Image (cartoon, rainbow, N blue to C red; front, side):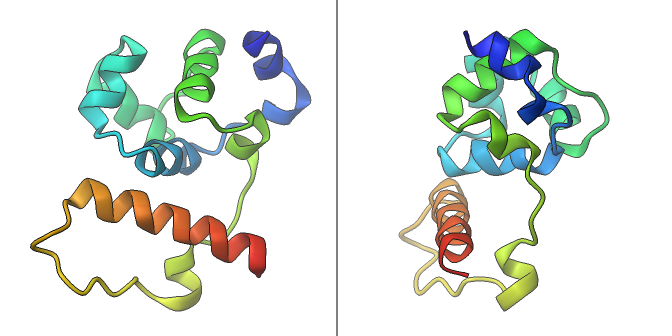
Length: 115
């Protein structure tokens, strides 16, 4: 069924940045995400910068792993950083980079739903 979603009009064009955004929001490092998908970290990097596009099977797995609707991956939007700057983190020592990215992505989504 997810493969059918990939072939739908919702995913006529995958926005590469959204793959990275979804990965970070779920707390995956590039390496862990690649392992979950059964591909190399280099392939993930290529998908995230738009150098290559994922095939339908890989895209279906990305949708499943990130738990995002297919339309999420084809929607353009300005990032929160472009609108309001970088979030301020009170203590870097207690928060991992992965945690900061996960929270920042979710803050962007909150700003989208409000703004």
